[in-house]
Amino acid sequence: MMRKATSSLLQRRTALSRTVSSFGSPGTSLSACELHTKSLQQPAFTTTSISPRRPTIAMRTQAQPFSTAADFGDSTTEEFPSLLIKRDSIGASGAFAEATAMYLDPDPTNVQDLADLLEKTKTGIVAHYYMDVELQGVLTAVGKSYDNIGVADSLKMGDMAVDMAQNGATQIICLGVDFMAESVQAILAKNGFEHIPVYRADARAIGCSLAESAEQDVYRAWLQKESAGNAALHVIYINTSLETKAVSSSMVPTITCTSSNVLQTLLQASSQVGPELKVLYGPDTYMGQNLQRLLQVVSESWDDEKISKELHPMHNRASIRQLRDNLNVFPSGNCVVHHMFGASVVDTVHRHYDDCYVTAHLEVPGEMFEVA
Image (cartoon, rainbow, N blue to C red; front, side, top):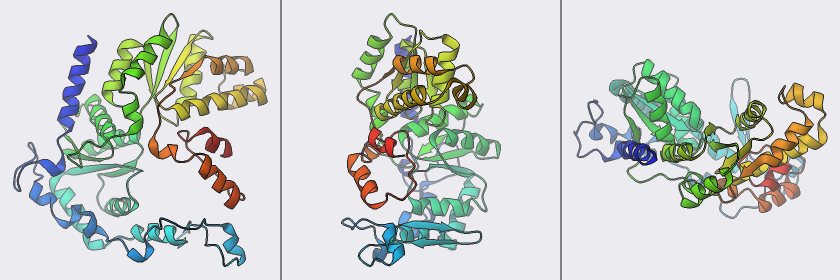
């Protein structure tokens, strides 16, 4: 049964490898759609024609740390990089922020060309927040005159694709890593739009170190070992492939979570099943460890009333402590980008930005999470 399910998902992943940029010679139709490779070679789809980067504001590779001290007349430091969002305008302070701000006002000709092409071909575009600011600036501008454009997180991208299909889009271009394209296609299919093709933007594999860590034999071995003889639940981060989710589900009851709902997922599951529930969280090691730390802090510093009112009505200090003890985290999975925000960044924050308000994603290393 597992092999059959996995084979089906592998076939789906192969189908997803169809890309906008690899459909034969100019003039070859993309499936039953009107979109042609020749059309996609128009300037609207080329990064350099959208907005060439200004070399004078290029990101520096060996810059001195920014500091808020610049606001007080210290000429030895640079201004803190800030986007200044006002009621009717956007300004920038600092070289990096200026480079970012300049892309918020893209060439109107390129914007209109892209909007016209998308409307003509009934194409929707969903892009992840991680996409380059140059690209996001153009997509945001196109979205003012063309509805089937969306920039969001990986889960919301699928919901947006459904909205686009309901709004007349006959095909979707996904700007993100491979598992995002898979998720978009799966959500479309679940909502009755399995006939809508989803195209990746590059013929090459667009991988993710975090997703790939859950595709290794060691991940399946960890699931099998830790779930043996226990009332176990596997909570898996959405940023993984459909194949990983399917294989995991065949081994252990599995729930998919996002970074925004993972805590409530853990709390609800443990309240429904009971204190004997063993939760296996993966593949993001840092996120799992940060959740363990969060639960520890809550169990030690919050009283029962605060926990029931602000966290979950069915929990108290004892149950939070039990959940913390029963939370087993996969020990060897992370995003290589979030991994960079470790001790050296923490040291920089303490030395140069000690007066700043710091926010951090659950995927960052624990020392950065502690700062935030």
